[in-house]
Length: 72
Image 1 (cartoon, one colour):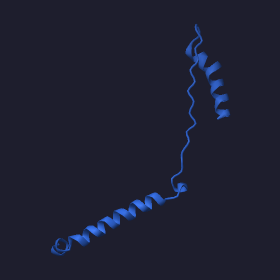
Image 2: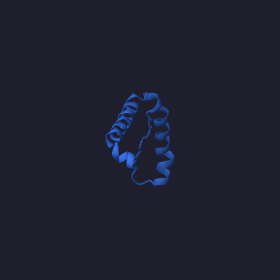
Image 3: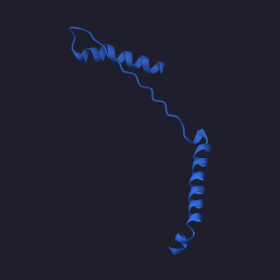
Image 4: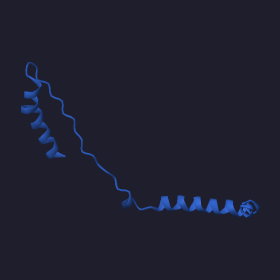
């Protein structure tokens, strides 16, 4: 421990080299190692006055969702 205190400049040089090497490695990492993730999300909201929500979902919303997902 006394050696580290005695040669603290050398210790700081090693710490800085370690940090610089880490930053350089992070910047040089190829993009294929960090892939982009696409999320295909669509929100469907249908309104049909006078009809129950279950029927609207079965007869309209589900059909629209299927068509939209086929498009995406």
